Length: 581
Image (cartoon, rainbow, N blue to C red; front, top):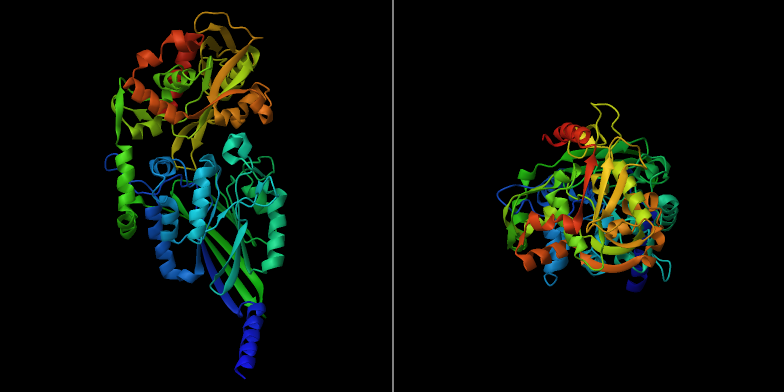
């Protein structure tokens, strides 16, 4: 009898499970972050400054869970969690024995699912594989359904996870940026390749819906919002919003631009970056006869107040913060004079000269190509601490030395400066390519470059001029190598540049020099570790950074905008608009 009763009970439970949710009204709250870039702690580490961080995000998340009920709330992140701040760097590469702080924080905050970002992949296999394992152990999937293994064609990371929340079954699918090879050397993502989100996401959604029969479907993508016309591979957020069927919410990211939109059936949220906002999606469903008969969606952003850091979270991770702060404040050497990164936009500068000197010090480099990677940072003269290295060089780019012809170098520079300047034809013309601009990422009003300043490459190891009165294609005049030897346009030179650039980032190699970046390995003659590590080693070996040494024209050469009277006057005006100086 007891055995028969057990069978009947099991059958009843199975029937109930197959019947779907009970009839009624349901409301789910979907919370999101993206592009936090290592902003785990609420401190700037140096001084008493506060930073927007996961600690202040938790205050808002907990408040919403209290009001709406924790079982009715899901919390997501759309990627780029492992790079950009001292804390991420410290636990990625310095202290690799202590369990990484991010998975512990994600578990503490109750994240449900996280998408993989391109900067997460940038950290390389030892880091993101460890993070994936730690997140899995915490019950949090690290999702990237379009990162496909080369050996068996299956996703390298999980594709989706199903949650039972508020009496509903919710399927969450996640994807990373498909344009990975344009920025990163293949060795950091070896063993896999990345597929476009279109049509893959729709195909996956259809399969998951057929298999799991969820009442709601959420898609997390580490992809920019984009123009929505299918033209930008790295920014397919609006493309998905406009085309997906059977999806209730898309959470996108990558471009650091806060954006929300919704129609009758689907909503899209991009919170921006660096914990500035919390994305809040509301999904309301009506169930009748065990089936969803009506849905509505709404999307919004809540600005984060950095002063509202969760006190209990601060205490729980105090030892981790203390370790990062001690590392950040470590004294390294001396800086002889101020470095201002914005100076690089008007010509040669102590800042960019330093980067060129580091790159030319890596054999067999003869010529260096580099751009300012910090938009408007200053490192004051005096004692250098490790924190200063993140201002001088914020990214974990490796250094490559590749072979290029003299003509390719000239064409490359023409393309770079065409991103940077425009032809001056009248006394009041702008020489920099700038425009009035209200920055949606920060809310600041002012002027902005039309292009991305981290693509404004200059060269060292040669002497050249850039004529601001001439059109694209005829601005660059290379007169000699730095040592005075002739520059041969038909000769081959060893050129140092970042792994990002060598992999095709910014299109300078492919569009400017017409180099096939898919075959860049055929041109690579040397690879070096991260450039910030090269900077660290330089300071330790020399004890200081002296612009008189790093700016030696016999080593790095010289370049300038000409005609000088016209260029200087226009640059003074433009720099004043941009930076107030």
